[in-house]
Image (cartoon, rainbow, N blue to C red; front, side, top):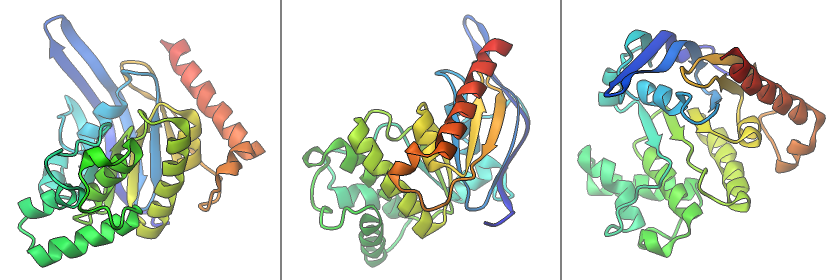
Length: 260
């Protein structure tokens, strides 16, 4: 794995000014994410996981501290289309086909029709949706819609994929299946992935690194480098190593509450 940091945050703070007074969302967050890593962020609701992801994406502006993405400011990285973003909801337009939804950012970016078709076909195959390009979102299951959302984020071939709890609304069986598919996709594409989740098993199963965050103001209480092999069948969750990492994540979440 490459040792180059593609995302680097130093002493990041973010405070929102509201009618009820300031809300301290992030406090002294420092983190380096290296090229090709799969990094999960886990913590209680409102702890700043999504806020940090939005800072990486240039969708929120920190109050203080520094953050760089591919050596650029987040705003420059956003304009350079250095990342794809997958939201909690699939966010597909119901009047466009699945292929039409995936090609939308390519249309906006001015790709030719032939290039759009080539890229749409390639990413649909990557997420195992080949043959569904003429279907509409309502004709697909929730899990298939989310895979289409991932394909859309992959279509312009950015090196970084930001994923904000994309499987949180899905049932456990579908979620397990998509976790397996996401790991295979990551292995094939070698993207750098930053992934927000509330699920300890999901974070441990997917990640090369797990970032545990405290309740607001969001701080990093632990960073766990996973010793698990890159090739991970689902039944690895029964292994002693997996259970040990899960306990450490849980202890980190408890410690965050105690410190407050």
